[in-house]
Length: 311
Image (cartoon, rainbow, N blue to C red; front, side, top):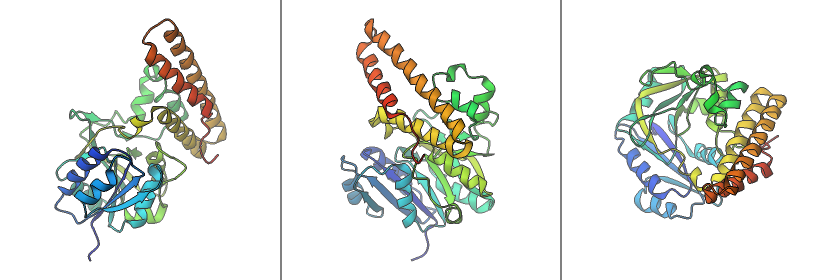
């Protein structure tokens, strides 16, 4: 049997219908020889049975627990034997020809180690998916309560707003909802860092690839719809914890213990302040169920301590 052009790894957890639609869109690709690997993180919604019955060409890896995104992808990488490798979220719809375009781009640009498509929202609008590496200053604003007050220059640089949505560009990292790389890159840098359970793993991976001398490219001629965050919506409190632990792991790993410690104290104080505000609003009777739900979530975040895994 000849070697596949592209190995596609999809890590899924309890998103049966989304996974079904994703696989249908992938199989519409007729110009490439595909290896499809579905890693199921102990879903309880019939995902395994659906894949086995409707997509027998897919290779199934059934986990006994929710192993997280990096570990799941690494299990897929162990089986991947294509010339190119695609990490793909199950909450995506691949547009016609997108995969072939990305493979063609990598074939024509041997210095490129990662290529990411233009991600679209469900309504067809462009979803931000290209980034520069975050600085400590960025970290205090991005995805915190201070984000609305951030200097424009900070977030404009981070989100690469100086590059038009339709312009192909060398960036520093791309979102992991759809990320294509080479078998040679994986052989050189290894798999994803499994200390990230969810979030920031693609940032870390692109940084390692970038530091190994490869380029990372945003390529909008290929388009993929991304129904953002459907798996993480199932566990809102854990989403807060996982997101911030991952953020802190990244800064501890690349900026040192002091930077991560300062950022951790800031995040804990931020959640404390938000908890107090939500409790006051709940006490005076404004949207009480929502306020108490948030109080509980923020309290669980504080109890976690937000200590990054591995340190």
